[in-house]
Length: 637
Image 1 (cartoon, rainbow, N blue to C red):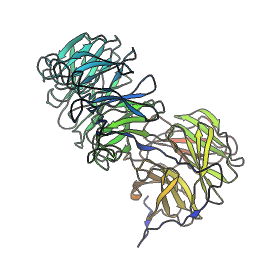
Image 2 (image 1 turned 60 degrees about the vertical axis):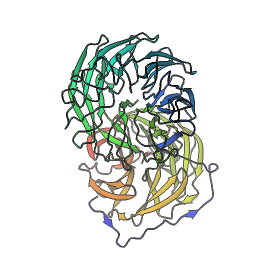
Image 3 (image 1 turned 180 degrees about the vertical axis):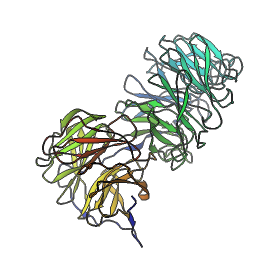
Image 4 (image 1 turned 90 degrees about the vertical axis):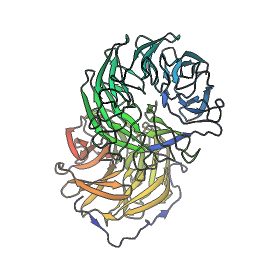
């Protein structure tokens, strides 16, 4: 904000708190919130380690994956394992490789139409060139094929089952020229090498194929092609191959390790390096070969994308980079098909480092992934982790009645209110909703409330619209300090609370660990007179929580870009809302990455939505429903 002032001679100040007991609702509870969390840490003494293949969600509701090393066979390093993880995070090994049946499964499994899992190993087998295997969910493994080198070998890539029921894949090495190939294999083990790369058309494919709407298969090679830095190709089931694109060393990006993801007939992928900033790219390519870079990584927002993108249920793509971010050990990001990009979370090393595999979206809507290294075991590099990326509630806004204090949720898609529900419990008089956040990490919105007379805070845990648990926090902000928003300012995976002093305009952050206060800071930069903080979100896609302000006189909007707890830079919106309209919520209501703003001029008045790209308004419209008399939108903020 241009009219911000900074205190001089500022000394760190801890807010004065009034300690209270648990006065209402129920006993104290331990709460968690959106961010990135370590679900499981692997260990090599003893056990499995270095999960390289990522996870798949099987039809039994469990996740399945592999570790490149570990297990009781293969000496000190082990030949690798296959494991199962329940939705609650319990991990168990259900197969240990022994060399003769394969070694080093780098690839994700695929579940066939018969319910069995299929995969490949980098080494081992009859010729030590790797294998293709079938395994039942109960752990009974059959080797379908041992590579010979001449018919392919040493594959990093998983398999895809075509619409014909046959499995298709690539070998990273081997084939007629030693540069890798494309093969097909039936579920009973009939193997055919259908193409061998010759370098001019690509070399060393590392990731699984994807079948397009036309029935052909599409993939990438790490090197080879016109510039020897990789290609995009398509291949028919009979082995007829077409090179769609050869990468260059400059703007395109180069060395695509990842495969392709399909959306609306087009394909999306990443490159490990190159692009405008030299840190890799995200690209789109049509079945006809029209290639477009939709994002160039900067290093700060990611570096060296290694894994194939995952298409989320919301139509956006989710992915990881091996490096980059604040700790340079990887980030998790979201990108729309049009290129609207945001960092969702950054790995720290403690929760994992160097993720090399795709994400899997669980039945709870969250994304699960593996980090090849990191975690508390096997230091200094760690033995790897399984992590979960929890997202804030999407497509929902909260309303509260001014007299009855009743709370309701509206689900919104774009500008259309699709449904509504009333929360089954009603807060006591004086308790107002501050914001929505998923405090217990179940994919459903919970509520933060504040008593306007005593300043006490409470959290309601909900199951949809059903109240299940509530607690008054044991710490109360000093008089005059009002909670104005929720965001993860210190990037620890737990939501922090933003406060503003109504008299001095100063801002403060409570760092929370669930429902426990672990620290606080007063932001030394002070907003100018008349500017009130109205909500928290990431406006520039860097993975940090930013603060939105509205001038109470002019209605103008400004954003503070934050670097953790510190003010980094300010910028003003070029567009100003109509007279009397106040920001009442910030939420992801449309199928793009960055947030939308909801405005209301008073109870029983129409709601208006701004769709944003950063601080640029890209679309505006009135929501399809008007709140009844006495109801006002109150979050999320």
